[in-house]
Length: 262
Image (cartoon, rainbow, N blue to C red; front, side, top):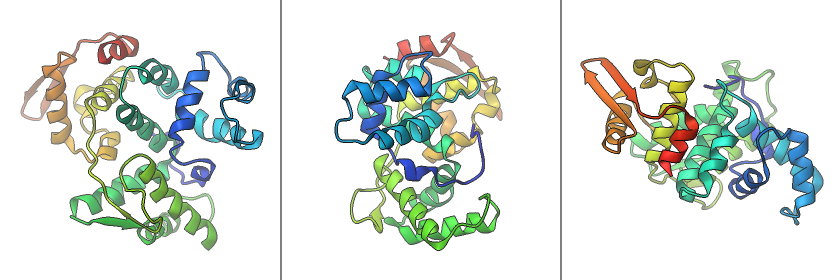
């Protein structure tokens, strides 16, 4: 569910921005435009040490693409706002991670292709050089609109590892070499993603193959196992017969799902 497969430098406007995102979710209300949210953020006094220009960058270039651009009719901010006061910070951060990867294809691909390959290969760390090689390969493969300068490549490489650190995939240590940390999808993220895909019209069998699961290191059989765990909580019912999966969805929409999760 990526809205644009091109690689950009948009992460330079902000990496995880976890604290800022929580504050903006509190300020935002359904129907509010991006400019209205920006103005409210300025007037609220909630960002006393951030310049007006920086606030605008955060709202327009980070928050809006990640949480306000409707994908398959879903505006993420609506449901994150509903959930944020009732789930743990770690659970909320995993949802932020999902939407940030969707809005920034370069980050999603880096995690799928580099992070999980290193993780499953038993590596202890990921370096900015690993990220740089990935970025250069993407440029060679035509993933960017034009070739980036060496300075831009170095900066974007650091953004990738920094963002992984913000979301808990890498440790916060020296910036050029970051130890890999254990990263396991939460049941909240499993339920949210499965239902969101379902309500967007994805078939039961196709849901298990959606590339968003790869952000959490899950292959088809792993997803099926996670859904079976959800069924024990009554959030859905899974019937598996060979390669054919049938899911009975017990929640009628995302609002009722969020209520059930909390």
